[in-house]
Amino acid sequence: MVSPDQEHNPWLSAEARFENAAAKLGLDDGMRKVLKSPAREITVHIPVQLDDGRLEVFTGYRVQHSIARGPGKGGIRYAPDVTLDEVRALASWMTWKCAVVNIPFGGAKGGVICTPSLMSSGELERLTRRYTAGIIEMIGPEKDIPAPDVNTNDQVMAWIMDTYSMHVGQATTAVVTGKPMELGGSRGRKEATGRGCMIVTLEALKKFGIRPEDARVVIQGFGNVGGMAAQLMTKRGFKITGLIEYDGAVYNDEGLDIEGLAAHRKKTGSIVDFAGGENVDKAEAMFLDCDVLLPAATENVITSKNAARLNCKILCEGANGPTTAIADGILAEKGVFVIPDILANAGGVTVSYFEWVQDRQGYFWNEDLVNSRLEEIMVGSFDAVAEYGIRHKVDNRTAAYMVALDRVAAAIRLRGIYA
Image 1 (tube, one colour):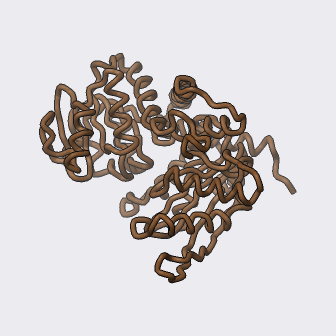
Image 2: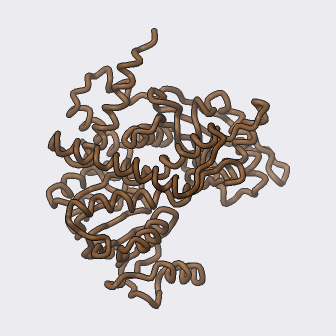
Image 3: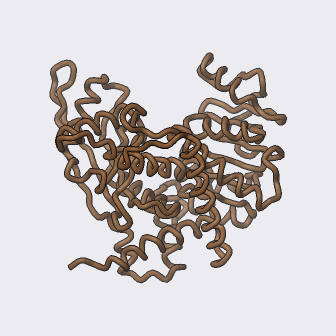
């Protein structure tokens, strides 16, 4: 159990949820140790010639948490506060996320301690290529497939793909996902996480007998996940009544014009003072009366201090770790239907899987096929988690962790322990 003074530590929250699910599954101590321990990790020190001629050494990490069900899968982040413990925890999160949507990947993660905003494009390219060379024995289409994460993008993935390809002597597009379309990227990848959130929200609405056009949605975050979810939900008939960003929030009971709001932000740099809505306090906007609350920004926004004030029927976690472990019990008492992060935002890794499949086949799908297959997986995974929760009399988050742990543990038992 997480103590109140440690409530905001997302890794402790993830560990508490792991232990809860493991106990309900009756996993023995040995299996718990295997499931919690990273399979492999590496630390590399990366010398980079800066533009001014100075030589700097950066530290980077790659962790493969589990490769029991397939190659490792997980992003690479560039940030000044990256730590090995953080990368380990994020890698384990990827294991459960891939398992809950039943795609044949394990979990991995990477990171480099740097400040990208203070580096030129040339410096970032040299850093990326040397980091790739340092971890090259760990990665590969059948070993571990990196992807973009915080402060990395499709260009960084192109540099990694090229560096790997130069080392192996052939173009190997399947070594990374989240690439530019010209190098084997997948259609529908940019929208995938937001689309996945919309799909599972539609399934949750059915349980309440609410039509999309009658659903009022409040979204926190107007970036790639929240912004895309807002656009897609609007097209599907939802009313986005509230939108919250780091610098303010706007509200319109009749539904915000999302395209107009995006244009306003592009022009002014902010969502506040939008003519199609009224400014509201960003902290209080979380508690607006709505059918769906979709936090799609940062972690730890729903805590023991504010969970009781939520006025939503459905909580769809677009962000990673937006709810603390202590807040879970409060939401359960309120009867909020939670779609946990390892399910709700798994659309991104699902379409990354599709990209990997297409690269390996050398045959690329149209966007309708990508989206239909994403919907098939997200709906099936939602149903599996909901059914598991009913059968075992647990909340959706516990059910999602139980499904994931059960699948990984089953793979380990079937493979056996090599000695």
